[in-house]
Length: 133
Image (tube, rainbow, N blue to C red; front, top):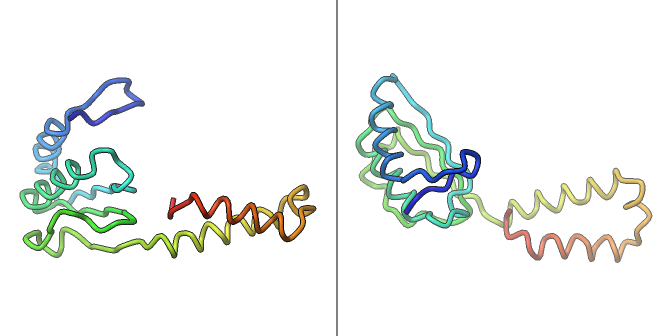
């Protein structure tokens, strides 16, 4: 399945991407790859498998992967120095979103005029669909 590159206006096959990364990581003492919100991809499983392959075979690769769900891939046979697992709970992120909304309501002169119940209704609507995003 192709990995869509909207910015380039063309598709990039994930296997070709893996091959390219394997080839080019060899030229570096250490390489860091950051993948944000992996669980929001339509091809999460395929991306996780690709990252697992890279981590297993590219000893100089370090991965930082953010997600609000646990990975399906078992990372037990990957070197501990390659991967640091930290799970982001949607509850914690929703608290950050709530604080952000409170701040915006307090800063905005128009929003300050809303009643407390309307402000709460706005927060509830935003947090009800946020799901940690």
